Length: 487
Ligand code: GLN
Image (cartoon, rainbow, N blue to C red):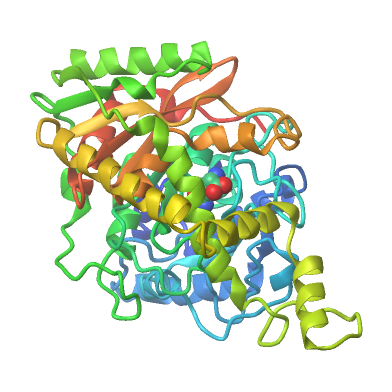
């Protein structure tokens, strides 16, 4: 058997090994389980590890491979963020209120991956209900950055990003409401893609902010992102906001040619307070794109400074409505404290939700309440429309936009937990794409003090092809995606 080094294995690499008969899926899966056993106590990227299920699925995958019916992801180990429903496997959202909850159904993304013959090695840690940027809001434990275990992996998909960076799975799925796929991907030195709103079904994704939430792949490189997106994109009648249309083959976007591609650099994405090392790396990346033949010029999205305010009204408003369902009656945690119905409801929620989730529910309830609705929620929606229009206009002139993914590299655990505003600032560059519903990707683009820097590309609605083309070409011209943490 070929010796498997989990850290080095991409989706395409695994496909070759499996189809060529160099390893079986059971052997490959066992190698990842061994890797998890060896390093998980220091990385802590999993809420639940599922070795039994994984080996069962691997066995079935081997039969499928032997019979010549393998799909692109058959037999390949992956992790799902723990806010995606998995039948028979605990789905907690890293919250006490869902501790021990075992869904009776699968999220559409899980169904699609299982149909491909994918192997689930476990569920990834996150900030409680995906609210946060460091995974420190997990009710269970923080995940650590594989590049420096004293630093955060970013969030809220910190578990999935750290797991991919550490070689605990080949790829993972994260969710992104304001940056939760791209920011942790950037901080962990991997690739994170947030698709167009509605391209990937949200059925079975535990709702945070329904008009912003989107599922997408976290992978070692851009080629893998295209392969995973092929498997999960597409219309789903169970998600009323799912886009009904043909899905192209995203692999076709993986050319290495970006000659003539019109690349815009929005000046509002280079702000004061940004880490100088990050800005240097991004400026160098932009020079690389120009040297490769892209037509690079500066542009402007003037309402960008309002995006964060819009996000922190819209997202909590939707969250306050979505989280009303956790009442201790239907499922999840229920208080032991005796009392009448209202007391029980209050106690369940007081004991079950962590402080950040409570903060969001209070902000959202306030913004939606009679007398304040017009001043806050309605105003935010108006500004949201302006932000969308500005993107629409700029994309008439440009194929893609580039920016840093995050203003800083991975920060030490505990550094920003005392100041929610400092934590919120992590997502200034990622939230606009959610507000507008457009696709965006983060790719490794340099190192600053031994920590990865992420470059973000944004494209217009359903232009994942352009996004992948630009990101892939950049990646292939550089070495950043090949660097690995020394664990
Ligand atoms: N960090 C942002 C927040 O706390 C975004 C989270 C996300 O994308 N799920 O809301």
